[in-house]
Image (tube, helix red, strand yellow):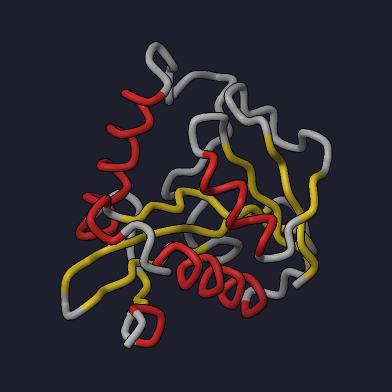
Length: 158
């Protein structure tokens, strides 16, 4: 059976517990992928605990057989739009549908928070992400967040 039906998504923290560990793994991977990028620089879009917490945001961790395998968050942009942030799947679970399940879960969370439009971005060294986003109905829009390494900005009605 597909991992899609077995992932248990739970609220988490981007800066603590399993969510914090996964988010740090993502930061470590991005730092290697985009060498020299200041992940905390003034030009980087913010996606910390303040942005990925209630009332306007959320952060989830996905578990497969009790093991944390993915995480991601929702960040408020305005009353009707949000941004999906910090999507991460552990390397050994990539290519198994986990990212797709995570994206769909984050869209459901966004709907639950009252958002009607989801936005996201991805960089040039994350080509699989752009393919997933396009496959899930995201259409290209102009740069909306100033991410200096993004090459694709997408939007989807929820």
